[in-house]
Length: 462
Image 1 (cartoon, rainbow, N blue to C red):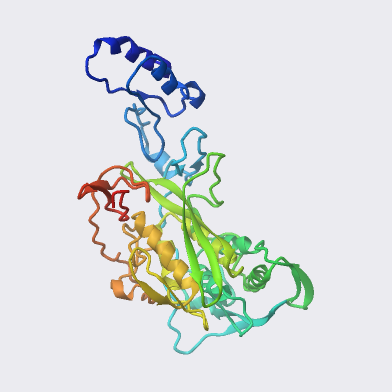
Image 2 (image 1 turned 135 degrees about the vertical axis):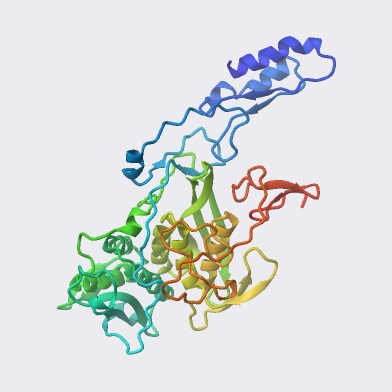
């Protein structure tokens, strides 16, 4: 039946009803809006007292639906499945929507040679280079270990790069945090993953391009910004050591649900944004997380951040950090992004500490840096979605990277090598309607008001 036919049916029986009629016109998700945009006017002209329309969408679901029978799966199909692909967003899905993923990729069993920086009582060699940019110079160091120092390193004939850091008073703000998270990628047993990270940094543009001497002969090369120049030097050293050669295992890369940032149609997609004000440094900007809906093994969906970006007055080196974290978010196992974010919680900088609200609480505290506060905000959003807890540990491990065993109060510290037990999480979520804040179906009535047991959202009466 068309939407107009629904209204006509109510108009036909209304003269014989002495009280009222409750009528909802259910239309399919792909029903053109132009075909029912005049329905309320038609109902008023027919003398009806009330009428409602409902068109389902991916977040709110549907009142009436008929699911197609599931296709039988075979063992062969399960073992040869390719990594999942994102479905495009339809223009008629409504404004309250997220991108969707149709299936899960196969999990990986191991991805890191070392869960954290290896304990080296005797020290280790490091290669250094002077990065010369328009606002000053700073030193770049690439720490190395002999190939036989780690397991499964038969591909490497020379030293293996396992960390990168910077030093110097003229280093751009945020470049140290970028080096810290890139160090964890160097410890992954996945050369293709490290190449992907360096590729992402190669095109980070800043206020102006500049020329810089490049190893080994010091010839001048033009770079779009200091992040791109730093990444190019790191790539050169890694290539010199043979750490980026083709071949070998790609456990992290295979675990991504999308290499590229998920793209929306003209209808857009949901995103979460929060303002950051660091009065100590004069920064005022907005952090935005784009989100995607992923399927769960139980047949439901879970919302996950898939990209992060900044707008406003912020250190431009954070654009490079945003590209790295966006790739980390698209690794299916949430333990991966949880590990990266926890490592950033203790990043400090001289005169960069500031007072700001604690996410999810009505109090303030001092944060060691803008980067540390951003990490806490992103962890909080993952906790709102039920992906991580407030300490940055996964609610449900997936096998790509086991959550290290640690007490919640020590969550921001280094985890010991070899631990493989997920931290216990005590959740008290209750099933209900879809929450307009986090999208989970955990919205209940509490004390006469709507309350989300997943993220704490309170309705208008609160």
